[in-house]
Length: 623
Image (cartoon, rainbow, N blue to C red; front, top):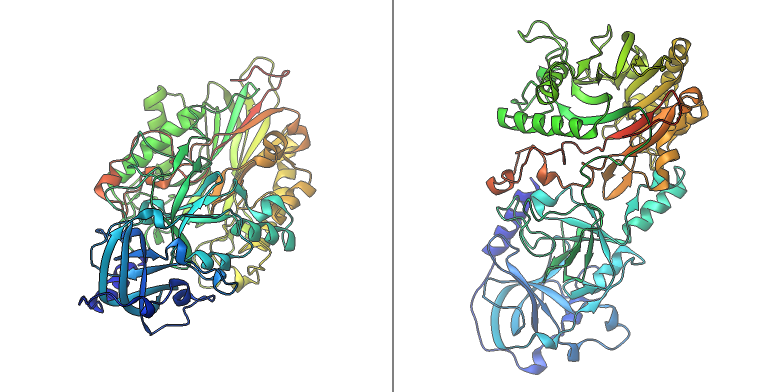
């Protein structure tokens, strides 16, 4: 609906446009733009008819743009008095009269506020008296600002940023052309600090060191998607999170609750975070991966309401909407698993289909994945550990697949049945989590007889509210349902204690929906588990990007006995740094954006896989 509201707002203003023109006003009748803007959040002259004069610093009148242009006071007429110095020298003019950047314009119109931006509309006189862009100099702005309201000082003005800015967030890039730029790669508050005041201080500082780069369009999913260097985004001209932009320049606007920079020239793009073609090499004879596969369903999501997915057949399907999307998703997923070059994969977010009354074989999604992998890598290369006797009613579940040439299962897989995962909220049929799934293995390597156990987890997400069960968001940076995830950690520790009786060590992997310093993780560490991501990747580790801030929700932890066998760990950055414009999903995308797909592992999910290297007979050769 956001794109629709944009269009309706522009339409409403265009209906109010009065396009009659008269000679320009005399110099004594001209109001300075900084007087129109004022020093507050809104103009002190709202509703007044004013005549202003300035230079066009950005023309956004083209098809699909914002229906007007930005006008800035000439440098010679900029405010010099202390009071006026805090007021902006630029303003948006809602007008369909053709202008070009650099035009010197005198116009009369009515002052108003639209979506929080000061503007002049109902233009009744407009005269172009020349063209000289040199009359306005771009104002140099350095991030961070001291407060978000500082940006109001530059609303409507031509700005330039002298520093390197990092591409941090691109969730809205495909639909709205927005990219968040930051002074450095930012991390979640609870990744860097303890929940509460310390974590919130990190998040608050992050907010002051960022700006949104807009594509100058006011439409959704354009046929031509603008790369931040000013050219077209293509499969041969992409970007990744962590890349650097230099020479960023544009006009600062305000719309949809954020300040946004409309670029007037392409930035210099530096590929500071190139795509990996393979995981970084790590020691170890065996490699175990954790991979959130972002809702791989074989049942298509063809309904707008509930059903026909989940064990009950009444829950929403969460994966591909069409057969074409399904094929695209599956091809990317297979490519991703093959590229990891591992022996065991603990999977999260794969369809939980255990019904036998729908004329499909049980466990279709995981079996389909294994079949597709074997079609690529050879018959019998991959196997599924098999069914367990407990699947709760959540639409997705945890699974384990493995290479029988590398490891042999010991016994059957076991799932944890516990109310911490199986309980539901009032009025909700979905449980609070996905049961942890464990399988014990032995390495097939000569002399490697120690049984070790892999436990795959997917804790309750942060996205939905748990207030109905007394677990609200406390505002400490841990978001919704933190106590629920802590209870799941406690249940997992009891499960691990049982598993250790038949194993020489337990490796805990999965998406715990908790950052490094949050209570669920510290509970597991207090229970004796060792954070392997922290040990091997250090403070810069991440597997996920949310709101332009990094952290690792996907993790690997080990019991002390298991940690002796672990030789290394790496994160395979094929997803979190890639814009979702490149994913399999065709929803909302224009035909040109759909065509950007290719069956490569990049952006098969929004989570990066975590890979652990293990050796039971010395340091291990690695690969």
